Image 1 (cartoon, rainbow, N blue to C red):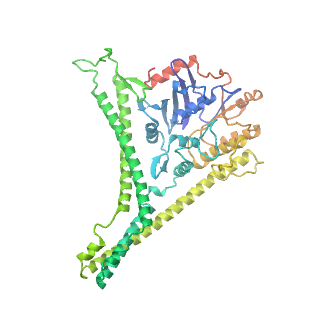
Image 2: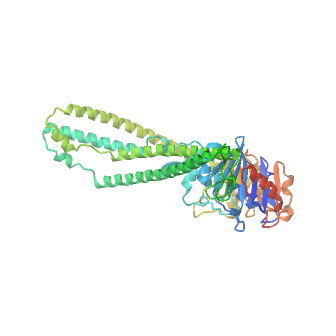
Image 3: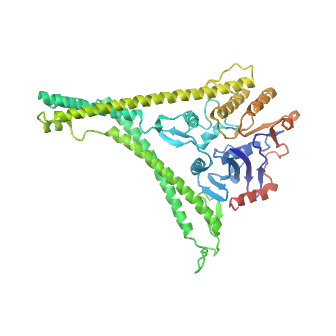
Length: 534
């Protein structure tokens, strides 16, 4: 993926950065507050990140347009608050939230990793994905992911495993716990049949069977597992209902748009309030407004809505399949005998049925053997997954340590994980090196093609020698790199002489005011190319 340009603005002021190279870019200035962080945060904002703009910048008042190239295809992504517009070739797609944009990303831009969250498969949140290749100037913490809350460190580990093709046992149709439940049910059934045969052959009463009820502890465990499965099914059902609602809403809009006919011989469509022949389509939060009076614009919006309906169709199908899988697991857990043992005994007072029971016992024994073999296979797969996961993490940490040792040969500290413990955090230049090490190692081991973006990569007094080594090491990567820094007066123009570095100087920008009137015409032209009218 290549960042080609970023546009920020409205009808009064704007800024455009379209000089990014495909390889190593360094944005620098001779002072802070020249707009470097605004540009970087705007890029990440368009990619789905939570806004972390400087407090003095009212980002919600502006449109942010990012042009990217991915797998040979070019996309324009415009974001205003939680609404997105994507342009690909001549097609326009409108998304009312990050979730819709994420599904489009997975389907059309590049496949997203799938993680297991709360017992369910889900696409990685963009906010989590971006932490693979982006380090911001603020909110740094070495012991946890950024903005941890609903997302956890475990989700990040899960994501990098998914990117390396390490299969989670959840991907199997069977799981160990369900098989164990079924195994125990079969053992109980076999035990009951054996007791029944023994009773029939010895003419004893049914009281012996009735005394072998489940223990209270087993019952509590069963209830706990049942509640967990019901929670998962309830959550899935809620997600499916939301997807159905959104799909239905878009289908209604689609129907309305298709009913518009601007070339009717008997008349034309007018606004009842003002008499205008202009009709508009508005995004959910009214951030974008499109004039659909023309057939071309209406056709674009129709395609966009059809795309969203298709995405929701796929989502509904996927969730329905998962609900059925979870329901089958729950049914297996709750499965009980339709007829009590006592009733079976009363129905058969002779030994004629014992042969049939013997056949059933043999059948159950075979199924138990098959289940035991399947459990063994799944346990081995799980052990393999854990081993692969451990090796993957060790490879990343090894690259981190090699990078760190190259940057600072005198260092004695050894990284043990991609996160530090809560009680051992890195700060200052050590923290900077820790994050740079991670960015390098992720790119090296995971072989992702995302651009590596680091805002203020020399923060906390990274020495000149170490900076040179960082640049040398990062230059080995095939990824596009976009780094920012503030230079001292005596360092000005230092990057101009470095080979293979595309330097972008922001020193001439006015402090706290990167947006200017002179960019507005070109910015409006870009908006118009995406059918956006101010």
